[in-house]
Length: 590
Ligand code: ASP
Image (cartoon, rainbow, N blue to C red; front, side, top):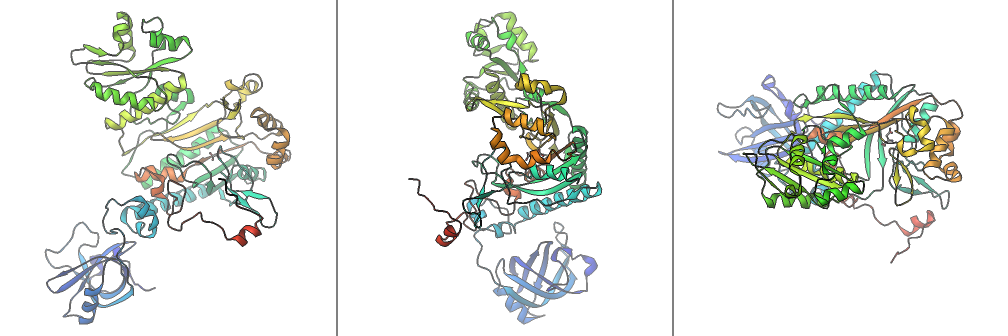
């Protein structure tokens, strides 16, 4: 090793020891003829003193060096003089008086400061990611991610899980996105698909008798880069045989509860055990199937009160099968008209045609966009239903159920943020269960699986699959954390006949099903154990644990919003001879 100690490990116990350190110049300053260097390695910082009276050569080098140069330093650890102790640094009691400095590698001035947390344009950070990762915050995120993955590996290994790698070059494994394709050189005109998840492979491992499998698995989905997504991301992929959904949920809950207690003692787990919401309860109360349950502000159904209320807007919506639901924004009765207009513009992004309001002042008098049309007793009933008190603001959306849920669900979180109700210290995990088995795809006039093709329906709903598929529930469970879906799983179909029925239900012609998934159907004929699993998203979990707003912040080398690697400049055109070997021709679409 080029060093005997890490910079951050030196303490007063080391006083008097001769040490060799190696690292980056975090900062250099000259003071009273002596040069001080903060030398940084991954472990932290050590203060180096170069005194011309002790070593003129070392001092000569010290005045030359600049931030981010890589140095090797020999010296003796000593106590810092009185008044120079820095209680903010773990190694703040000591310093290293150097006799020799070797420049291992000089450095250009970096495009942004490494030694402070300044705001830097993200494109620049991504282009120089290797410098960005040197910064304290990013280093912390990488370390946390490592600890999370190590915790998972230890926890599951202790419970008899085997980590098994599955191929990246495979066949389509759809999870609702487009596939990334890889052309085959040896099989002209044929392509591998990168797995959107190892779903089929982990099920086949169950057929193989592995019983308890996990993998820190890379998944590839060629989706539009809206929101918090990356073309490749990492899941803890997990599958178990001879289980029901309770077993998978209990194991996952124990894994993440104990992980948080061990790795994030400063965060507060809101619930233990985690609450369980049915899909319809999640929608009814929070407007979303991945609810943020750190705060109240729940939706209330007032559809019945809108019927024959005198307010035509509401009445017409209800006549057409729509709904009216509202929120009570406690203590916000003083919101101005302008502020309410802004909220109206906010919900209009999600299809709401308006936002009706009723604001109560401190005396309980109201101002409202609709109350004058409403029968007096109905107003009273509305106030009661929403548990309104003086000073509250009531907001209502009337529309198709999907629009009401989406707009009020989003508005709820928007208001929660604005009113400071989203405590970042709190980690609120929850389960959402009893999802519909399939949803009607109006554009394509067919059923889509709510989860994926391999999820089993609830045993008691099997007959619905034939007679009225929209009524069947799936054996799916979603793991939610602070309003984000952080994982989903299910008990799977393990029987050829039912799997074929589901393929047919979602409109896969038998020959297409056979061509794509024939290996699964065949495997199900060779003794398949009942099985199920889950796949929590590592990036999303670590993002919330790290208090970051985007998964890019917890991925070492992410793509940018436009799905490009701006550091290596990828993707990039292939050489003509590579294309030829791959039997490909690039056609200009113009
Ligand atoms: N493969 C699923 C997904 O990626 C997870 C699972 O069902 O285990 O969402």
